[in-house]
Length: 276
Image (cartoon, rainbow, N blue to C red; front, side):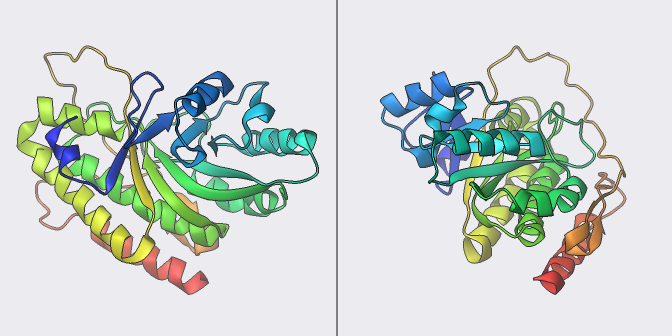
């Protein structure tokens, strides 16, 4: 385990079943891995099973926390719960897409979430609790990676207003690997990234109280020549229930001493507070 994570006791790392540690949690892909994690002694609150779900999902409904990224994912769990019996509620988190970064499968934008909020609330056998935040992080480091952490925190807060829902955990997907690559390939910008992560952690501990998770993707060979960081485009995503548009034009600029995120956070916070 790297020093940067060892020094931050508020953060937990979710790893695959082969690498999972008791102090963190398990990212289980499929029912077989969920059962394996259960046999190893992990509690349902520390086993996370993201979509897509397999045909045996109905056998592990009470063994883990599911993570859905589409209305169809949620309906799959709803049907499995109905087939399992007349009682019981399945806990499921939602996977939100980071604006401006490459779109991943099984993710929802804040705009899509706002449009689907009524249908999601109509699924009586599910209770939405928690958020996974995802975006392509290859080549992103320093302040740009820090903006990813702040964007996830703001998106999770907005999600609690849009549905509304509880937020027992917030998980940044592939972020542990991204920070490790930042430390290895761009050590000069690591402090900027960790400063933003520490700010989010302090905000969470004083207002949000969610467990903070990072996930680690499988090891791969790192190129000797760093890839150029991708720009966060200005494609806007709106949180309709929050009453405002949440722009994603968080471009790094050497000419600005104050990042654009400052006004974005104030705008999102005021909008969400006005609808709560």
